[in-house]
Image 1 (tube, helix red, strand yellow):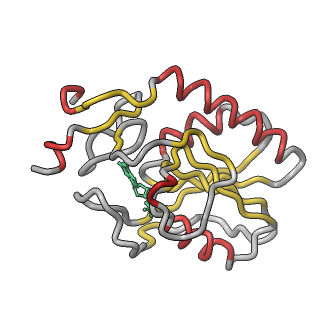
Image 2: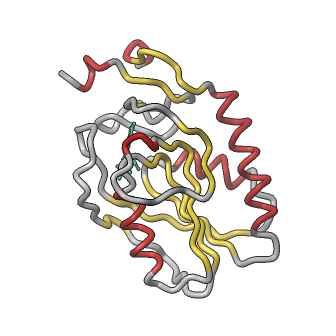
Image 3: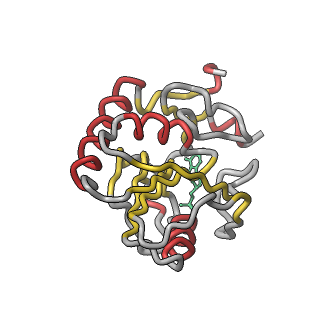
Length: 179
Ligand code: 5GP
């Protein structure tokens, strides 16, 4: 698996440190509020598990699964809900937990969809942001790292459902996805 990685962009230690910082900030911002963290499956799974353990206030967790790229490396812009939330979010403070914002189309869809359910507030935390490729005006409220326009895998991010279990974020060798 590791032989398919061209370079390590973010090490396990760098991710851990930044996730802890985000946790402190989010704990301060949401103190005393009814917080629901929504993990966008599957890519945000690892980030969600680590981030919520760095948040030192009570919160609820929920999951939403949406369609992603499939075996390609570019988004179609068409988003489908594969699994919806368990609980209603009306009047609650909702934090969308995402792995990466690329074109922003997925996030725009989620913000429109969840926003229509009348939460008390709606914010986004993403581990990674690729601002170079933005197609719609949307920016995360909390961002772990800004990264260059490269296809990355690991720490939840996949290519063709593989590499999610790498503990770091790496750049996949182009020959893997150009096969
Ligand atoms: P967007 O709609 O912003 O273009 O794409 C968002 C989704 O595309 C992310 O949630 C993620 O699943 C996927 N994605 C975008 N860039 C990358 C990348 O560099 N690597 C991987 N593995 N997935 C990506």
